[in-house]
Length: 440
Image 1 (cartoon, rainbow, N blue to C red):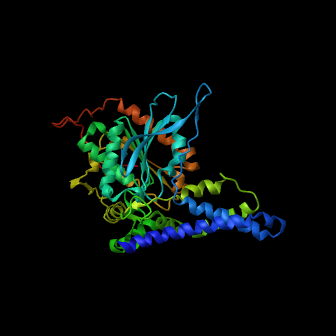
Image 2: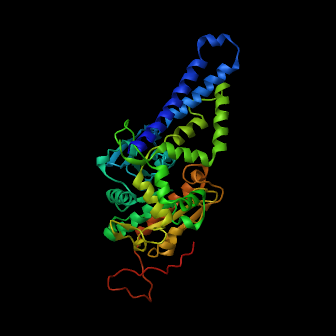
Image 3: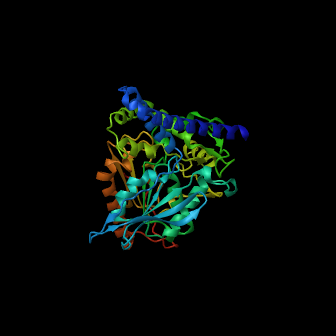
């Protein structure tokens, strides 16, 4: 225990030291007396210090949502604030309240990833949807701040949280799951279909999620197949140090995750920081320039509960429990084929190197109880992983399609379901599911 806690505190010490060095270089480089010396090295030192101090200090700060007010029809600004609808130890259900606006017809739950970054990673997604819908989001907590007494949190607990959140919001809900939570959102919807069919959401949109990681190889899936669970636990899991409320809790530290993120594209990140230092030295940077906007969010990382991270790798990536329709919750098998009332859309990016095309659309083959005309897939050819939910591809192409899909789902829910003239209803009165052969 002490060894892993010492490792956690050592990493935090390294981060703290770098932030201090950056602050010191910034202060020293801008010492007033040096202004009389025309030596560009002092200016470059201060620029280096500003970028380094900002970067390392952001790593332990949860970013603000900072949603701008929306304009109303009468020209007044409608302020957006946050309201916690359901509060739980590992995550909250949060609503974005648009003050002064009547409830919208479209009601959207964004299921944010628990994969190292805060839910604020979806800020641009929220901003793009708020003018046209009421929006809720799953706001997951940093595991370092959760006392050990709160217990464990694994993929089954995550699924049950989603079930609770969806039941809270009601059946006229449209769920959009982005990246990592897509498989578990699919499982949560299936669990609702079995336990409380009337509480199922109206539509389900899965964006860039690893429903079947084996459908298309990426560096992420290759890593998961190469490393054993023992190696993973030994190399990635630490215990929270003495500085935080979660002291002693086993976690996959955010700073360790960040090192992995950066290593995947090290050259790109190094070039970006080098260019930013030169821009600061030349006086061409600003508080909210593109570099700062991106890295203020990208560098802000959170610890994941160890059991959630390990069970995700073992059950979703290695065991392929969702892809094989073998997922269980509290010992109960979850049948994805039990979903019958939900319209489902999958979205993939043609250049997604995290969840490659083929991984997400695999969900449609599992949905044997959903009619073919209520299943659809869209591939954005030139989009990478981030672009399919927050970039230009999302704003210009994907978002309009998703909103149209939601509207179609609302219209379909109001139409009575008709059985074929030559079909006999079974004793339970339910319409038989269509053929499992899905045309996408």
